[in-house]
Every structure is written in structure tokens, then in C-alpha cells.
Image 1 (tube, rainbow, N blue to C red):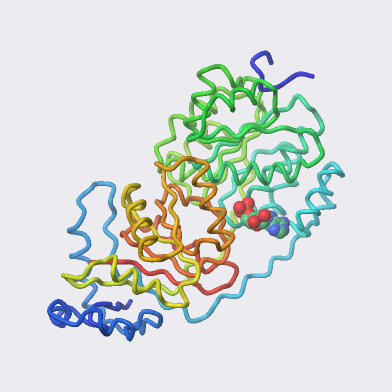
Image 2 (image 1 turned 90 degrees about the vertical axis):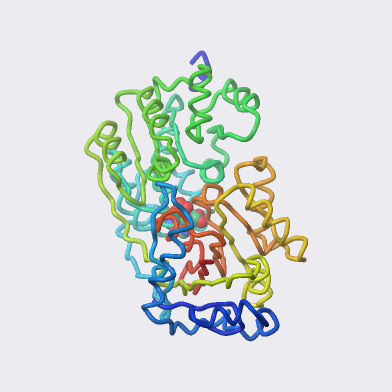
Length: 438
Ligand code: AMP
């Protein structure tokens, strides 16, 4: 059997003196009883009664901290938003069921055994076109069911012709592995093979698996590029291409790698591009590599509306970690995702929290791949209830029931902020996002 991929083939709360303060009474907190009354601080119930004029001073304080050109100056007031109503999920009436799709019966069985009954909007709107061979441009983010929207048509293609190959490019290892997991579930019992080509794990086992032959490679741009350059992956006959979270890959500086990979694929390829936003360089990629794609915009519920957002101001002289510790002792902080900017800061913070008796773990780029996976699993299964992460490590992850997102460091951009806080307040549940400022 040919082995397709083988070589041959608005308000503000200050948590300083045990009550909300404004700038003028911060002095008081500096001198005195900062922690003694902390428990009575309104951490769990920010009252959102700040006054607008305070924002200016907050903004100045925050923006002066960083001068990096990639750092967007975000008005602190944008980190504050009271969530009063939990938005009801808009009911989408699908126009198809999975059994309507002209796909293989075993694939239908595997879809059903995953518990999928009705297609999500993006699946409903794109799968019929994709099955006809059309290119797809999905303006959608994680949580919309976009993975199945591209996997189902691609798997069906491979079932019809075992020589078919596909490449799926994702920004992070975690997302790539999540896609592979879903792929394995959809192809159960079908003898269709995939290889995950991600960084952070030895390349040789991936090479070994590629040489055995597979139909689908799923990977991150850097590792895929490496394997193509080593001639372990030959894309010349690859007729299905997926760019998942294209805008994230752009942010991460992968645009040249992606362009290189796409150029190597077959000219009569079918392309699936997914992106939450459409910055110019992504539009250019689409223009260059997609052929009159069906454009599906999935207006996801703005999860941030379900997220109560507030800031945590740390008065001078108070240790930020102590404020965080105090927060985390609140019983409502059941499953907390904490973001920090640098890998070493993430590690340090998680170690410190463990020392202080919390069940914490960390994921960041300096951790070995297996360690990251283990930590994620523990967090998902509530063995850990605090996960400290960098933005890159947490991108695209689907972690249920996160009660709080804490921005221990202010994110670089507002877009990143929205991505971070979207990890909570999912599935119509209320979430809380707190951002440390000052
Ligand atoms: P995704 O946006 O692809 O990461 O999918 C988000 C979540 O929705 C994942 O947990 C999927 O397993 C789940 N999902 C995707 N499509 C469906 C469907 N049609 N019915 C039920 N769950 C789905």
C-alpha cells in the first residue's frame, strides 16, 4: 500500500486596605493594616462603583510600566465590566443532521458515538460545501466546533481514496494534539493514520512514524517546516490543507513558515482556513492560496459578556503574591487560570503557590511537552485547581468550568485579554476575570 507521507511516496476596586480605595487613600494602605482586614475586602463581590476619573490615573500608571512597541496601551477601564445577565445561548436551528451529509457510514457512526447529534453552525454551513470540494474560510474561534468542520470532509476524502493526504497546521502543540485526539476518535477502526508533528518532543519518533506512512500530518509550523526540509514530509501530492487559528500563527511570527508549507502543497488542493480575525497578512494568504472559498462567519456569543471583569490594585509596599494568595483562598476560586507574561515568571509563580499550599501547576514553553500534557490533564480533571500559564501555552485550549481568569500581568494587547478571559464564562456559566494593575 502506498504510504502517502513516506519518503518514497467602568469601575475599579482596590484591594489594599481591606476595602475599596481610591488613589487618595492608598497612602493609608501603605502605612498600615493592609492584610489584617483583607478577608473583608470585597474580592468576591466587586461593587463596581469606581468613578471614571480614576481611570486616567490608572492608565498612566499602567502604561508607564512598559515601553515595548508591541505593547498596546489598554485603558484600565476596559478590564472592568459587570456581568449581570448570563446571556442565553442563541438557539441555532441546524439545516442538516449528520446523517444528511453524504459521508461514509462508519464515519457517521463515529460521529454519533462522540455524542454529536446536530451539526454546530459552522459545521452545518461549511461541511456540505467542503464535501463538494470547495475551499472554506471560517471566521470562527475555539468552541465553535471548527475542528470537526474540517476533519469530517477530510476524513471522508481519505476514506474514498487511501492515497489522499492532508496537512493540518495549528499554532500550538496543545491545539495540534487536541485536533489529533479528535481525528483519532473520528477514524476509530478505519486504519487511517495520522502523525502529530509538534515541537518539544524528539523528532526521531515522528520521523519513524512518518516513514511508516500516514494520511494526515497535524503539527505546528516550526516542526513541520523542519520535517519538510529534511524531506521526511513530501507535500507535493497533498490536496487538503488546514490552517487553524491562522491569526494566532501570524501573531506568533509563523507567517513565512506557513507560506513556505502552503507553497509546497499540490496546486489542486482544497484549503480550509480558520481564523477568529482577518488581519491583512491573513487576507493575503487567503487570496494567494484559497480558491473562491465559502465564507462562513460564526458569530460566537461574546463570552466576555458572561464574565464579570474587575481590576485588582496592589498598593505600594504590598507584595503582589500576597494579594494573589489571599484571593485564591476564597472558596469561589474553584478552578483558576492565571496568566503571566514570561516563562520564568510563570514557573516561579506556580512554585511559590505550591509552597503556599495550593494545588497549582504551570504550562509554558520551557516545560517538556509530556509535562505540559500531564499538567493540563490534571487541571482538566480537577486534580489541580490552579494553572499558571503563558498566553502561548494556553492558546486554543478547551478547558471546561474555569471559574476565574487572573491576569497577574497585564496582557500585551486587548485582543489577548479577550482571548484570556474567554477561558471562563463558557457554556452560559458565569465567570470572573481579575486583572492586576498598578
Ligand atoms: P472546537 O471548536 O472544534 O474546539 O470544538 C469545541 C467543543 O465542541 C469540543 O469539545 C467538541 O468536541 C465539541 N463539539 C464540536 N462539534 C460538536 C457537535 N456537533 N455536537 C456536540 N459537540 C460538538
